Length: 115
Image (cartoon, rainbow, N blue to C red; front, side):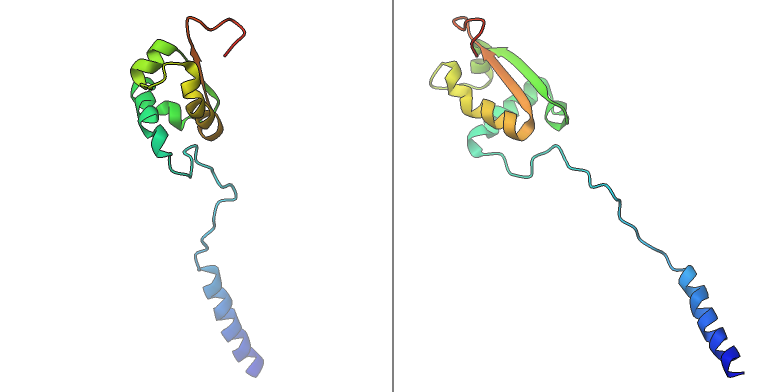
C-alpha cells in the first residue's frame, strides 16, 4: 500500500512534467551586417550621402559591394577641402573594414594601374 501511494505521487509528478512547456533557443546566432560600433562623426555625413544616392540596401547587404565613382561625383556628394583622391582614404578604409564595401574613386589624372 505504501509503495502504491509513492507510485501515485511519483506518477502524477511525471505526468505534470510532460505537460510543461520547454523554451528552446536557436542553435545558430545570426550576426547583423550593421556594425555594432557607432559610425565615427567624421564619416556620418559621407555615409548618409552614400545611402541617399545608392540606397539603404547597400549598407544592409552581407556580401562585398563595390562602388565606383569619379572624383567629381565624390566631391559633389561628399565635399572635401582638399580636392584629391587621397582625401577619401580614411572613408575608403572605414567602409572596407566595417561595412565590407569597396569604394573606388578615380580621377582624370589617375593612370590605369593606380588607385
